[in-house]
Length: 392
Image (tube, rainbow, N blue to C red):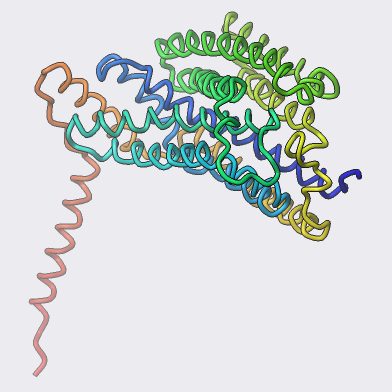
């Protein structure tokens, strides 16, 4: 039985949202990975400052894509949702725990006053940024290899601990680091930080090469562990695989030549093409070997309602996200004083790590002026109050 047009359209929308999360959420996770690898407090201060300035305005919004994917999977393909949530409960729980700890660490490290607490919360943010994409990758690897039965009795340990699942998790981590380094190159260029441009160009090159190598190894392993998906990748999805490889090579060439126009778009194509290629290669299966798209879809009426809601979301959420990223690129979402506070925090942390007494921050002139004006207004109001003639 062939899947309905509504089921195909819903699955396509889900994979578009999944690709968006891989790009934007992946870039945020990659920022945490580079934060982890930046070195000591003084050595990594400049890189961490750029990561903070780039992530702060948008990092919470990017999880909307993951929520969108989960809701589409839950309401559009209930049997697949139930099977995945049951068989892969442990890696999914660990990935969600990583998202939670990452948010806590990122928020509290900017408000902590003691250096030890700043280091602890910063390490929490960085480690969680590594944990989450890895376990999400193991979930994808488990699904692709057909080790998720349609009616699992409980967690299937072998599904997400297989070689293919572990390789897919490592590939996800490398891809997040790669897309983040490319984005951070452009963020450094936007701010005119030449040293950080060279810093992240080198890391984007290394992460790109590592991602390509892991992709090749995973691809070869799929020929043994997931022959159906491998046949799809070398068949109907081969054009998307070729586009991903070509875009990845083009990014490395653009980095080598220092040719920045189109760099972000080309890197995004390299990542998105892999996600769409996986979906096309797995078609018409939701869970290879156990559940097809036709058998696992909700009724056509429910799918049609989902498509209408998705269209409404595209008309409302899409422009909002576009405006958000447009404002973020022009640094209009953070007040200049916020950037100053980030720099002062980095300088204070570096001074404490080096054993130097931190210098007191200079008073902010606008705040003093505002305080004086408010004090004058208050004095005038009190004076007028007591100078009024009393009514008998």
